[in-house]
Image (cartoon, rainbow, N blue to C red; front, top):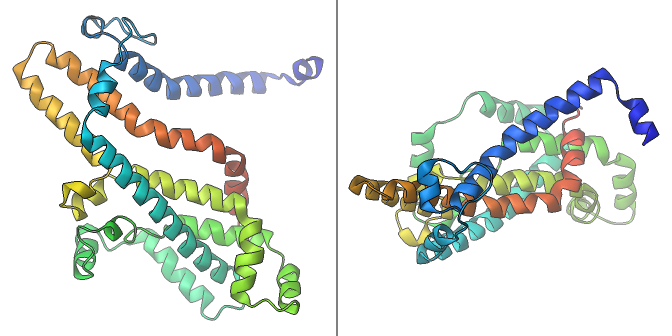
Length: 288
């Protein structure tokens, strides 16, 4: 305790106050949505619900979760997240490892073409035409293949491999009889858990929150992910607002309930990967 007081300087005090303010501004919307979604309609109508629920009720969550489409949406979203994250990690890790080797032929040329895509992209319509020509429309693969590799994640992972995997270790593995694929699978990947967990979280969150791709590539309701189904539920409640009266209150409470239902699962994943997160990002951000 004495040591912590001795280290308190004006800079650390101001920094702590600013961080507390940023944390409060970040957390406040979630606490407010939780309070409104758990409060009775009368209190929401009066506008006297802030951070603490009043007249505690779970009817909004029962209304959202009782819809059979929610279960289908959860299943599809978990399928897309699991399959998409696995495919993205495999392709990104293999590409990044190859690009981290200075002996790779045309390495600089490949890197120039990859970085070029950061500045200039094909756009929505050309990408849609490519997906359509490949026969991926209205399939599971349309949700996982078009954005399987992120350029930023590829560069971060390549830098991680270059900075942390010593060449002497790979040369020793070659002397023991391993080929390049064996070195990658049995040496490199086990030593790369921080960056794999970090990049995996990036991909998982991106696929979980993906809203545009399902609207572009999916037509079958049975393939819709959770985000699209919740959006349809919110639109239905907005249409009910035309009748006026208490529907306005129900709409606001149900909207907050749907947002929390779609957000909490991916938020609960973060604590399990937090110990890898900072290490993976910081090492991967170092310039070679």
